[in-house]
Length: 287
Image (cartoon, rainbow, N blue to C red; front, top):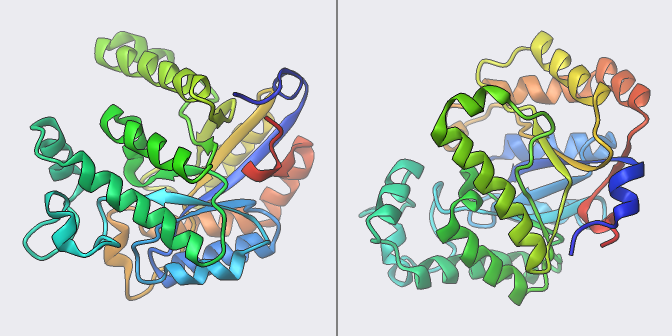
């Protein structure tokens, strides 16, 4: 079940989704500011993180989904129930260690499903119905995690999901067999989500770029919004402000402030207006 063909062909509708709500107070603050400014129309929350409850402040204002996470912080569940997902200190493994364990088949699918279920349930207990799912550090791209996310999403009646169909295909990827196979797989993955009854956006793009500065951020925004595809596109952003909890943000820290200021700038407001795009959220989509 995808978006109607009429929507795919004839409109420019954009979901601006802010990832990582709950990871730090500074990220939460930036997302709230962008929501209040009418820029961010959707967010996904990391329900295992200490500041997740602040998501209640956005209830009814923008779309809210679950940002499935197995690589930052501690699990929602008692660590004794998900032993294959944590280190000796009860902390999730880094993405590198997690993927190594996955490849060696050292992760319990039952542990992963139980933790994903607990993350959705925690959002539900706040009185918020998730309208879509995505994942931290793109775990959703991996078949092992994708299958489990799909099972949990169906259980909770969540039918929106992020897919990775790029706004502009990078043809240089064809020079690498591995990159070509990954691109083909992601296209197939999108089709599989739709075949199994989920709704995906037509295209995806992001402002994420290490070393991002204001000039390049505005240039990227101008490029994206002057070349919008027909149909519904998700635009992923990672806003935030530096605070005492930036250890959870990995290497992408200062760039979050750059994203925030660029998205709040008068320059972007002009770019957005010129594009003629309508800002929506996953809950506004007609399947």
